[in-house]
Amino acid sequence: MSNGAKPMSEMKGRLLGRGNFVAGNWQEGSGSVFNSYDPVTKEVVWEGHSASHDDIDEAVTAACSAGASWRKKTLQDRSLILTRFAEIVKSHRLDLARLISREVGKPTWEALTEVDSVAGKVAPTLEAYNIRIKETRREGSDSTCVTRFHPYGVAAVIGPFNFPAHMSNGHIMPALLSGNTVILKPSELSPGVAEMIISLWQEAGLPSGVLNLLQGGADVGRELIEQDSVDAVYFTGSLRAGLAISKALAETPWRIAALEMGGSSPLVIWDYTDLKSALYVALYSAFVTAGQRCSAARRLIVKSKSIDFVEALKMASERMRIGHFSLNPEPFMGPMIRREYAAILLEAQNRLVKDGGISISEARLVDETSALILPGIIDVTPIKQREDEEILGPLLQVIYVNTFEEAIVEANRTKYGLAAGLVSRDEKIFQDFLSHVKAGIVNWNQPLPGASSSAPFGGIKASGNNRPSGFFAVDYCSYPTASLESPLCTLPTKLPPGLEL
Image 1 (cartoon, rainbow, N blue to C red):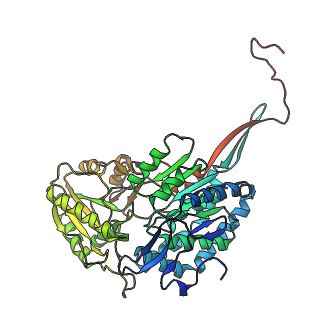
Image 2 (cartoon, rainbow, N blue to C red; image 1 turned 180 degrees about the vertical axis):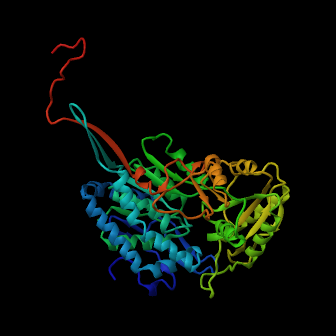
Image 3 (cartoon, rainbow, N blue to C red; image 1 turned 90 degrees about the vertical axis):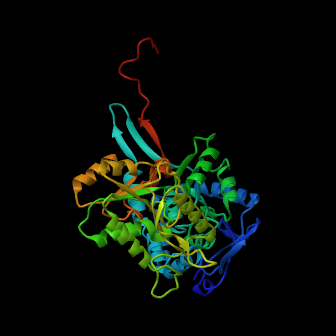
């Protein structure tokens, strides 16, 4: 193995963090010490230093210095590095999946799907670039109109913990392909995965300074995006953090900000042919990744006479296997990322009950130490004024309605607009749903979480700023220039009135 990824033997115990990756070199950060750990066993997975002010300055300088030569490389040259990276990811598939499981608690089956998404991102990124960011020429009577695309420059990528490899990569790949240089600030909860991803990019042959890594918490991200030389900020995370970024950039509107924020996504179960299929859509939508996906179903909207479905859902949720990724047979759902996050969810559940909600299946911690939590289902129909905040984790709110019109009203009763879903055997009902529900992702008889890399991913309203990720990510990685061009400077056949030469 080259100087890239660490061998598997080093991943079985603690990963002593190499710190920041700046200008092609690993550097121990000069900030405070922090670590990540297994959310169930509390075993330390990664330990290292956060970036300091000087480290941030050095990373920005490195990214700026590398920009000119990286932009001059041909699209084919950049594409080859992306393709090589994907092949290297595939060769380290099991190692990377194991590290994801250890650091954020995902079951092995789910961690493997994330790794496959990282490797599978190259082809749709290349396709999107060739379709959406393509030089065009239109001949006029006396000139040619040419539209070209250029990289913004230095892009800061602020990554989340729930998809520590895939979501950051969803910004990094199109940014690099478009000719930008990148500084990654991953979640402080998953520094080890970020370190391995950078190692694999290093092994793929990225030139020095093109991709840099800064470890640390929100303070590091805050200082990074406030650097004058950072031209673009690509963020995936919570509404609160996204608003803070937006405010920080308010006086520099020429800097692009792609903000992918949270959701309170509705799933409407209206009519179905097969009960088990409908239950699967509901369970997967609400509880995969322990409910920690931005597109997870937070609200289940059903007919008033659907008590039997809700009862079947309760029973099925109680049969779900929950536990550490090392269990055999393996679980469907792992822990939340931290026990304190689970405590926040339980506080929200208590508030809903206090306000009049009826607990159907109570969310509760599995033991005295870990972040394992049993999923909860609560009927919030009696609550007249429900708080409209994203409750991250496996807590599903049930709302009973009498008509489909009421279902759509309830679906739109949120400031968020990321995803919405409908289970129904009637296509006309889906077309009605599609026309009236306000969300960037609208699924029919399919789970809400997850998306195709060949389609845009993102939301409206408080879920984002309409710069979706997925297939449209190349859009916010380049800016267009429009040129009117003629090989010779000639007089027009007729001068404007009042002009004599």
